Image 1 (cartoon, helix red, strand yellow):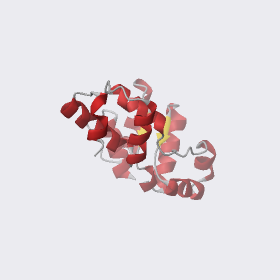
Image 2 (cartoon, one colour):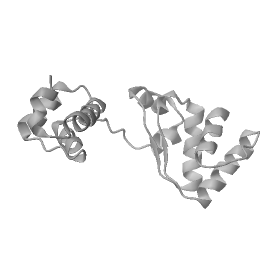
Image 3 (cartoon, helix red, strand yellow):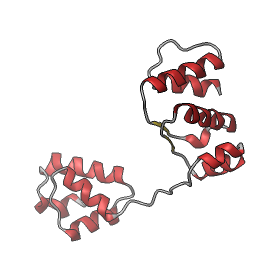
Image 4 (cartoon, helix red, strand yellow):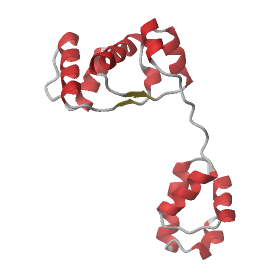
Amino acid sequence: QKEFLEELALSIGIKNIPKNKKDLMRGIKKELLTNRKIIIIDEANFLNESSLEQIRHIHDECDIPMVLVGTERLELIIARSHPQVETRIRASLPIEPFSVVEVSLMTKSFNIELDDKQVMKLWKKSQNLREVKYWCEDFVEIYEGNAENFEEAMK
């Protein structure tokens, strides 16, 4: 619990971290009330129920948006937690697998002009968007983004 609050305090810009949880919580709320921020907590599936209760309390007191990102396990932790926590957290939104649309947007962000067939081929070959990004970086570096070299780059 305290470690979570200390990490949160550091991430929102509190420099002198109080020693006890009560002062730590007070400092976090003061900072968030002064400097409104959106809190995004990645790997939230590793939080315990007490930390979720602290998050709920901070949200209630400061009325700031909070986004919890985690695996399916997060839903189980929320369901087991205090009823006030569960009722205040909106339904989870599953992340869909990446699509050909994201691949097309990624190639365009690198100024690589591929036709629909080429984008589809790159999408089918790729395991994730990170792989598409690396392919685009290499394609620009090696082939200067010239679509005429697409087939060679796909080997």
